[in-house]
Image (spheres, rainbow, N blue to C red):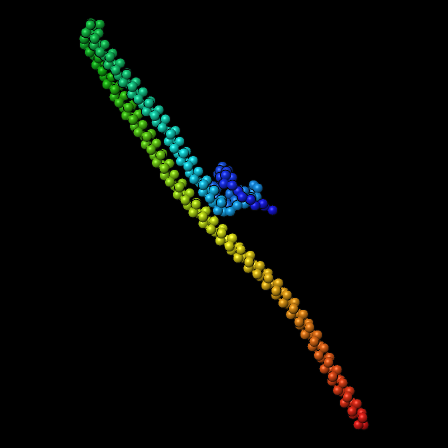
Length: 257
């Protein structure tokens, strides 16, 4: 026979976490079945409901902390992308400055007569300038691409946060609906207990009436038997009286003869 004992709030909270690890969302019937299978203990639905509600608040806070940790985990990634972007820009800028300094050095060398002719130096500078312009255009293009990638990643991060926020609201709505369902379930269980109690009372009353009916039937059969016996006795008495009268009449007739 299952023993009844009080179940502490801490035990119910631990049972809720244990059920969640088993992919079962805690509710009153599951928690009650959990303790029934484990050691046969029971407690009131009100105690279970209060403890499960407290566990739901703890679960909600833990989920919010997880979402916050996710945002904190993504922040270093975007900061790293930003640093790499700045490093690429700095590298491209250093390269362009170096090319410009080299071009100025070539101009200085041309002035000093280190090249054969000014026209050749100018042609070389023009080519270098053209190359510098092409590299500058390429650098600008890469800069735009990196900026677009950065904006894309930033937008994805914001979309992720927005999605998490919507999921959190949906989770809250589901938890509220679940709480209402649990309250309705508790009310149904209370109604069921009342119905079972009424049914038990009616069943007991029916048994009592059946017992009374059986006793009345026995009494009726006994009275019927007694009535039959009395009828037989009365009939025999009538016969005896009639016989006595007949004998008396016969005797009278004989005396007359």
